[in-house]
Image (cartoon, rainbow, N blue to C red; front, top):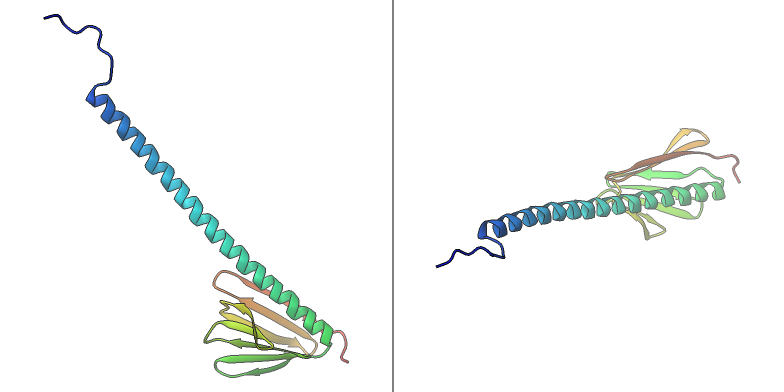
Length: 143
């Protein structure tokens, strides 16, 4: 019998090596894609929360400036009630929500506070699990 001199094809060892290398590459790519997706979702949620808090600060600041009067503040253990002109903001700590005139205004809030600094200056603070924004507002005149 003659020896096989013109062999074409792959040996079992070469096929196993190729499958192993391809498997490692696929696992690495999957890990990168999964982490990228998780990072994207996290950043999207953070940006939405930041946008919600920023919007709330703008609306409250506008209400205070429009009313031109000092906010009326009432508190108990679970709720803080802020009367600003015709608008009423209620922060309910038990459900972590702020309502404006009975309608849910902002959710997932761990702290909402409007505190007087001086007789005509107030600090507005809104905090959720990721962000803590605050601003100061000066009441220029009373109507």
